[in-house]
Image (cartoon, rainbow, N blue to C red):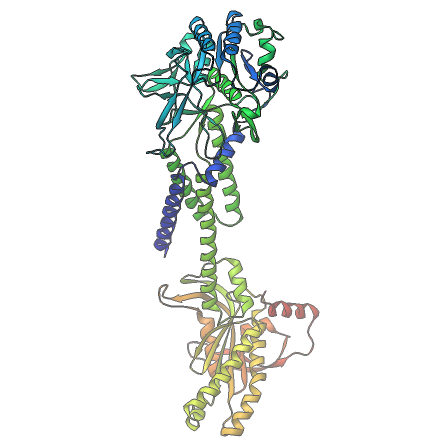
Length: 634
């Protein structure tokens, strides 16, 4: 039985592990993965003090004010050349123009001016856009369909290029920076933000692509990017957040800087990003900081620059680690809850869940590592639910087994008390103080000779029914039917302090209820059917006797049982005989008559025997209360 239970538990653990591991392997889509992303977004959010912006990162906005004053897009490129020259001459560290210039402009002179500016100022960065295939041949890859470089008429060098691809997750949210992408010549083109971050980093902390090691490094520190060269970065500003004493990047209007309202010297020593900052320019995306308000692309690049400069980026654990967590938590949960049940199980589950969530948060806080939370957590919960259901089913099966064993022999209230006690029904017994009744039909053999077998069975069933009801009425245990005899126990399996009294009351109940049957048998067959009853009290071994696998019988054995049987054998028709021990315990409660000492089989000395005639009419109040308790099966 135990082996079968462990096999079932092992099978359940295997199914749970495989099920959640399979769901985990399906990829980045689906509600569970969105939940994972949502939880990660929440834990990465920072206080205003933690997300204080880098003062050397400034924005120049192509906003509605600039569009109103300089005209609608696209602008003449001489405007960009003019502003870039102003900023570079004023001492800006780097200038990034987040405007795609992939085609030659309408005015060749303007392109020539832009080319001259690019040549004069090598710290100017222009954007490259990678156009990816709509359907990737392999999962996790970024296969390119085409690449949009700045027009040749602008003359940007390879060192002045950075890609501006902003990659969204399945839910449309930007969480990751694609550190670099390879062009058709297998050359790595760094991200816009990587190029700008290097202007703010010391030489020994520069972010570079190591061709020999095929990896990205920030100085000597390896950047753990995924197969797409992506890494999750921090966000320091809310979408479209104005600068305050605590947060928000310094941002000025393109027109204000170009017109001199904001002096170019203001940007001395800073990295400057110039880009669209108006809804109509269609360069805005959702970020982890808001599910409704979108952030402009130039803001996203600024946040990524600061994240790289600060060295704050997070990675996700490999699938193998996540599968291991699913297996570990599933097995741990099932093993624990095989031993812990009831209310304690919920406390242990709460502790396990809290411990895993805390570990998940601490790994991010101290190691910038995200292990998966949803799938191991749900695997653990599934294992817990399975354990609870398994224990419930086992308990119900045990209740059914106990009910089957005792339900036909003891009253329902006694069965319920046994189940509530939680005691295991096993082979063996224990020494208990009990009272035993033996009942037998007097004149059964002559009656059997006069009746047909079917009539004998009918009379016998009526007689046995009378005995059974009387035993149950006084909360006794029907031990067995022995041919035309009955054995019953009082005081087991549930202890009853007044079991001798209950046994005698049951015997008197049998005598009263048999009067009608006796009269009918005398009238119809000429032979009266009367009972002989023997009652004895004392110690006996009570328990389950038999085969654990095949059959168990709940019974009592010992000298107390034997004497009760001998008293019944000596009882005349309609007579209830009790032993000296039983008389001592019920004295004053019943009308009795001494029979004297008789010799019984198995006893060397004679036994004092008393006949019970009825219930005493008057009983003290405290004894009546004790009698009531006995009826309730206390």
